[in-house]
Length: 241
Image (cartoon, rainbow, N blue to C red; front, side):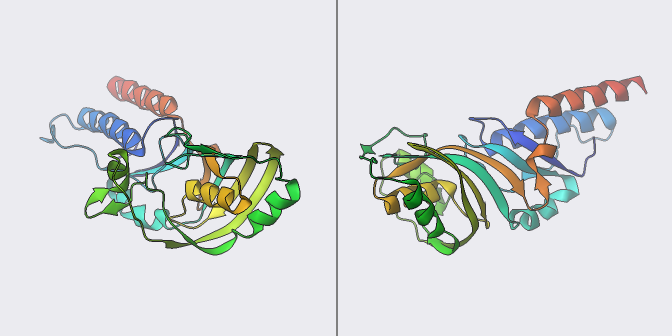
């Protein structure tokens, strides 16, 4: 285990991205203390940061940088992203996903495969997208989701994003399975909401997995349990040397 490195983590469901960073920081700090017990840095925490937030209800690839590699965070964040997920039509939620309860339903019996695929094509290319009110976007120094959870009205400005590919991989209504390739700053929750609005029956994002950030792939990622096991194995090895 290196002090300066890039770790690929498969973020667990319901963990925040900060939960992952906090856990890894604690693990790496303990490891560094063991490696340099007399360094006088007992109270210094390991330097750890992630390159792109994942919502608590999303799973998949979280790129975590440590030590000097934290300088690469901005570069990694700017890379193209790929996701797979499920859009459920005929129902909306305030958060555009399942973080909040369904607040409206609508008939979707008129929705056909042809309509779904034609509508998806409208969302490829450069788009102006409004982030969800339940998002980490800051308004006057406060997170939008903090305001939204208090019942305050949240008004966010549209942002330009690029959706390179919006593929419909399977249809089993009311569920539509998707693969999306997009630019930094794209909210798949907003895409699901806007897609449902364009269909005419509403929709929300019911599952999401990030599969790629630039050249980094989910298939090469460690689970948090694997990461901790790796740390413990190296700690034991260090103690025997």
